Image (cartoon, rainbow, N blue to C red; front, side, top):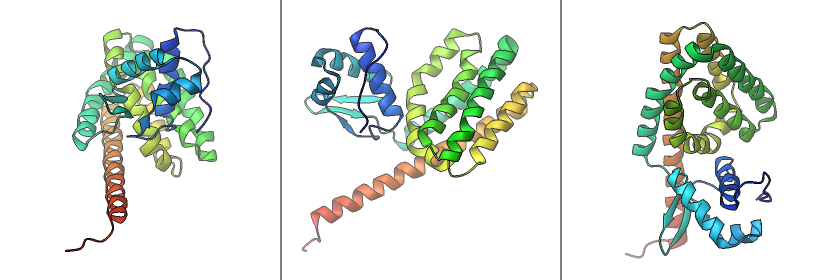
Length: 238
């Protein structure tokens, strides 16, 4: 695992939280992985108090599940969670795009274009972390320029989970094909021309397809886990 280093001078718990958040999003901690407070505290060179506070903040963001007397774990969504998450995004993102077009079209186009520009070298390098970050920047740009802080804050409720699922589950596929990249370019073109209905239709398909990939990948991981468990238990003696 990469060295966990702190930078910008913010409150200690905030700094720990932001570094752990990025580590979860980038897949340094796998979905469902245990996060040892002691290990994190030792790695950062801090006491366990700011780590515990950071875990609480990450739990509020849905990135960490704290089980009393057991430990802290990276979230693992169920099929129902994924469906609800995608439905939420389908309701929000086209509306954010509509507002962004009216409020700050040029700023949004510039931010989305920059995100797409960062995708190309990520595909060439097959760097799923870089691709995932660029993909996240694309979608977040719609909210950053929509001019409605309540809409933006609503997306922040799920943005960390979406980013973590993207890096862990869809980006490894996206960097091997250009289909996601081409879809993002079409979305930019539709947005820039103000073709809201077509943008909404394509965005709905885009998010729905991501949800299908998430669900398949998690089901595959569950099957692998069962296979490992059965192998460890050995053959049954009836």
